[in-house]
Image (cartoon, rainbow, N blue to C red; front, side):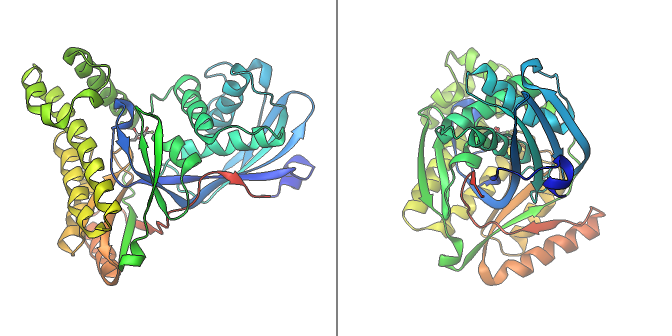
Length: 375
Ligand code: GAF
C-alpha cells in the first residue's frame, strides 16, 4: 500500500516498534513482579506526514479504508476496532499535555496479530514515536511505555500490565530485558542462544483465542483480591519463603493456586536471570517447563494446543518449553540444542496433524531492538 496513493502526499518519516516474546515471568507484571522479554525482529511500521487541521487519518495495509478523527474530539472509546490504538495514543498524548499535530498515518505490519506477540502494544508504541517524532519531541522510552499502557487501559479498556510496552520501547539487540516493575528498573541481560549452540524456537499454535479478554481481567482481579486479603499492596510483596504461610491465610483454593503461580513465577525469573548471568543458559530450560506447568495447573490459562506443543517439544528433546504471553492461545517458546531445532518443529507439526489442530507456524526469535525512527 503506497502512502502517496492513500494520502496524496509523501511521508515525513517512518517509525517502527517491535513485538515481543517473554522468556519467563508470565502474569507477574500487574503484580508488581519481574519479567524477561525479548523484542522480535517483527515490527509495526508507521509512516506519517503532518497535517495542519488537527485531524488524524489512519490507514493500514491489513484493513480496508481510511479512518479519520479530530484530536480535540477524542474520548475513551470514541474510535473503535483497530484504529482505537492510534486514536488512544493521540488521546493520551493530548491529555498529558504533549504537543501533537494532525497527521496522516499508514500502518504496515509483519507481526502476526492475535498470536500473543504483543501487536497491540507495538501498534501503540509505533504511533507514539511517530506522533512525537513528527514534532521532534524526545520522550524517555519508559515514559512512552507508560503512556501506551494508559492508552490501552483507559482508552481501549484492556486491563493489561506494563511488560509489552516496555519490551517494545526498551529492548536492545542481543539482550533480554530484565524489568522489575515495582522498582521500575531495567537491566539488559545478554541473550544469544546460537553462541552456545542453542536455539530459541517460537511456535504460533494458531489456536483461536478463547474468552481471552474476560479471563485476563478475571486473573488480574483474583490477584488483586488475594493481595488485599493478605494485606499487601501487590503479590510481589509475598516473599517466596513466606508462600506457604500466605497460602494458609487464604480461604479459597482457586485463589491459593493463582497466588502460588505468581510467587513461584517471580522466583523463576530471578533464577533464570542468575543462570543467564552465569553463562548457564541450558539450565534455564527446566525453569521454562516449570513455568508452563504452573500456568497450566495453577493459573489455568493454557489450551490443548499449547500443552500439546510444549509436551511434544520436550519429548523431542527440547531443554525446556512453555507458553508465552497472555495465554488462551498464542505461542510457545522452546529452548533446544541448535542441531535439534528442525526435529522439534517437525515433531510439533506431526502431533498437531494427529490431534486435528490447525498447522502451527514458527518464527525467528532473534533478540532485537526496541522502537526507533527508520527514515
Ligand atoms: C499480556 C499483557 F498485555 C501483559 O501485560 C502481561 O500481563 C502478559 O499478558 C502476561 O504475562 O501480554
